[in-house]
Image (cartoon, rainbow, N blue to C red):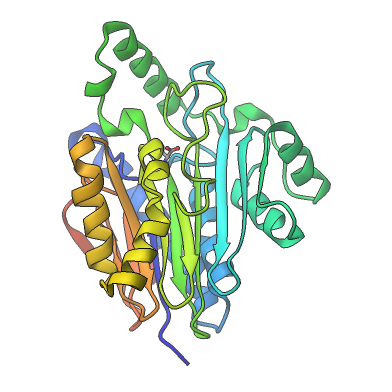
Length: 320
Ligand code: ASP
């Protein structure tokens, strides 16, 4: 029996500390803790890493505080086009959906794609129809819209009109949710879900549904879920790059993750972060922005949650 471990992120595009009230920060931290609890309940009862990462992501998709599912970003047409993926490190099986508009929990649809076993990535209306046929919850597209995202879209459009889009805050731009886990059987899994970035072109697909970029898991190496400007995660094949560095160079999870986030991606001046867990249960959560919604449970069962530089030990019973 190996150690178990779990880590999540709720996107690296966190707001400046003063942009949210203390009550809003607290509510986001509670939802991070709820997500960790959902995953840990599975892992600590001998469940699979795959079920654990899905459970974490579902909680964050249902929370308005993160850019995935309910509360997702709006594209340039004021519509939601959601992406999600999941990967089983034991078998290298993976599933993903992209440009979906009606699936309440896109990560569940990604899991169904994986379990069907033929396609890895399904997109658009056909993926919405697939999810419906599979019996998943479908919703009207405006279910996902929150006032915060409407404001963020207006702000990004104003930046675009003024030619200052690059100066927009990370929180106006993007966000994502993700989870990585190691289970008792020594298997790794990763899952990621996003609305992409505010004011993205209609039809744009980011790194989240691209296996090897925003999501990757391979037993014996690591599981990775990323957040940040997806185009760069695709170009650097971030998830696979980290696994390769561990496998070929013998780097630790922390070394490999830091190299990619701080040395490869940072010079591009794009916000980026990730969570990764290694085959030994070690956890890394680097980011190159002001903060990243994140949390983890150590192999000893200690819960930690953070938004900016500080990470707090949490009592899991403090979240409903
Ligand atoms: N990676 C996501 C995307 O590019 C966005 C983000 O995480 O900020 O779609």
